Image (tube, rainbow, N blue to C red):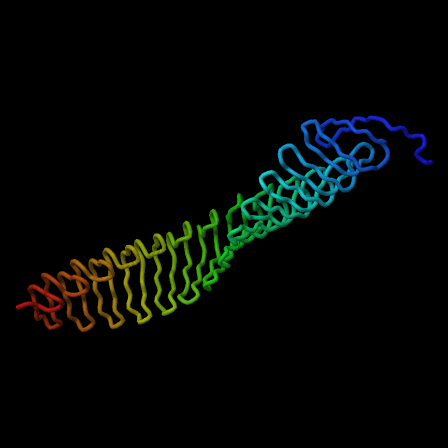
Length: 330
């Protein structure tokens, strides 16, 4: 017979992890066998030339399991590796490492689908969280890196350049409510220069920080109103100009999104008031000059003449005294 000159003998088997065990077999004949590694791990499959080749199974001492293809004692080709912590990889192997295309499912329900290199996500792929959020794009050494998109469970999507697992640099966001953002990011938040477009209420173009309008910018409203100036925490703050669609205009100081501080309010008809504002209204000392030549100098509260003041008509007549709710008191 063809194998007549072969003798059954005991051979040393050097595994891929350099574990040494003993196997009674014909060293050059492919045959089924069970291998016990020195740490107590066990593998079974087809042995050829003293090494696992073809389909096999391994139960490792640490609780990990592998079932799939071997080549010259190493995991190679298609296989399934289940870790003791219930993480599970199914896909391609090369030289004992997860390499090629595969799916890794984690104990918490998250999973990664895509390319692997040396046991880590590397190349293009998608990381899907159990909560429904996902990242699609490029990976390096196990982390999102390169061009990619983050998609929230509600459908909001931000795409751009990813470094250290975050959007950094330029990118675009589209939101399910119809809003959108285009510009610079830092740690996945709009930061730097950008433009935010509201689905139904105009645009903002300018500076951002931590996802908020912050710095200087221009806010255009759908109703035709316009603000240009400083922003803090998403609201007008500092010095700015607010122009209404009806051509009324306020120029001065803002706080918490309202006229607060020293400012000038000019009406479309030519009336003009300069003084202290509080919560969007004249409050404090102010001077108003009217288009008909009249003027008022004195105190205001909540937009009305209130307190001491003098009204001087264009012809020189004067009303001086205490005012209440816009009317002089006798």
